[in-house]
Image (cartoon, rainbow, N blue to C red; front, top):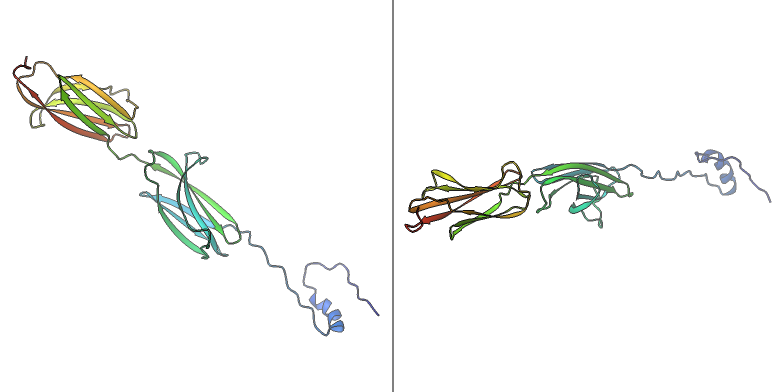
Length: 237
């Protein structure tokens, strides 16, 4: 009987040295196989927003698993809505991808954060953010009613109202005859809805006129509507 002892072997390749033992014992050299190096490199990722479209570009040499994008508040602390995501199972399995998604609809105008994330097959994740400004381009809704000597203008806007006005024009709605009523130009209404009531101007001669009502929101979008105003002989004076 006998024994072979080795001391102070490190994780380096000592196969040549150990083969002197294994060849005697088993007739075979020692084969060295290093442990695989774990993937700790995060994916590369970038995101941009243009014309309401979010484009996320991601890449990873070891293969990608999933790419996602979500809408957060301005300070990137509160999730507001998902934007898009690839399936987590099955994984993408590609080294590069470009994903495009539409921004969610119905979001109140303002400044937000788009947060995009990419995860590779080893579970490493990269995150990037980009600011996006959602602009209100929708004009307010405005209606006008004429009756019993008063003019009622109703206006509404999801982005809040700035001002509501009503003016008197000729029958063809071309020539301004005079103001009927207006909210303050210097102090925005700041409400989503308003109902304004003004008296029909006094001293009108009998005939047909046009009431033109205008509503402007805080983003400077303007809605306009008209209604006829008929002054009979009994109302003149």
